[in-house]
Amino acid sequence: MILETLKSNRPFNYFLFLVTGALFWINSFRFPSPYNYFDGENGSMLFSPVYKITARVPLIQVVIAFALVLMLAFVIQQINSRFALIKSRTKLPIVIYIIIVGGFTTMHTLHPVYFGGIFLLLAINSLFSVFNNPKPQIGFFNSGFFIAIGSLFYFNLLIVLPAFLIAVNILRRERKISEYFILIIGLIIPMIFALSYAFYTGQLNDTFITIQKNILTPVNLFMRNYPLQGFMALLIFMTVIGSVKLIRQYDSRKVSNRKYFTVLFVIFIFSVLSFTFVPATSLEMLVISALPLTFLISNLFVSIESGFWRELLFILFLATAVLMQFADKLTPVG
Image 1: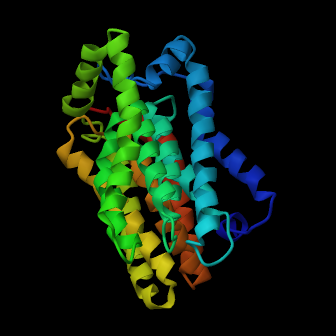
Image 2: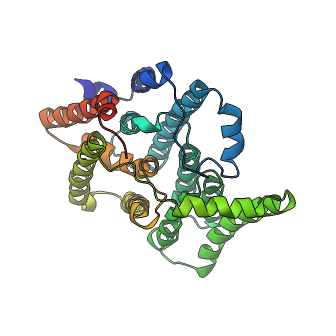
Image 3: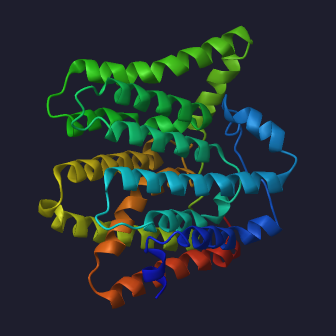
């Protein structure tokens, strides 16, 4: 049984996860191509040097993207292990994230969102550490700091900042106004250094133009991409039944666990809202939305009692992602 094998805690599964990811990326390894950036999308302060180094070698861009996806998956697993988000000991979140992003074939090459995702996970890890912590200042500061660094790669990562401010109310029993300020200070400091560097190097005006383009440039990679819409419909379906399952488990879970999932849900909501309120946001934001979603879907697969339905849903999930390797090339993206 596929799911039973993948959700076990055996060290050998790390090899299976690597093979799974490589199989999803095999077409990109064979026929590497760069991402079709809109003007300014690859011009962020920290991503631009990476892009300039790799621009002429698409294969390197694909390899770096693949490595970053694996890194994201393993950081997700570390957060799951540290904060016990899923009751049973399992490495399932790793393969769930790999499969989700594996279905987004357009994203199988270098994009700043992957770097942003790494720093978002580091921010979430720091944020969760403040629960019942008598000295939460470092956690709040680091959360803001990591979001800022991530946004210097992928500017629209800032869309999740309000979720982190809301999380202060969720995670802290007795909120202090200073905790909000510490988080904001952590965010501002890297921004000040970045803008100061841009000023002294004569790039300040170009930096603001790039930021404007990354917010206001209208992009839509979903329209007429019916395979992608179908894959997203399946993810939405699993999100709904996963949420229902989690609500039913609510009373049996630890207080910390409830709060962590609530924070993840708020982060997910803000990432989804970006599709409506930020014109430049498109397919790449799904890489961010998939981060909190991975925990929910992993919990769903662990929680379904019926082995038959559990395996059937997972096979459908896996098969749809595999189909995306071929089907989305039959439909024009516009």
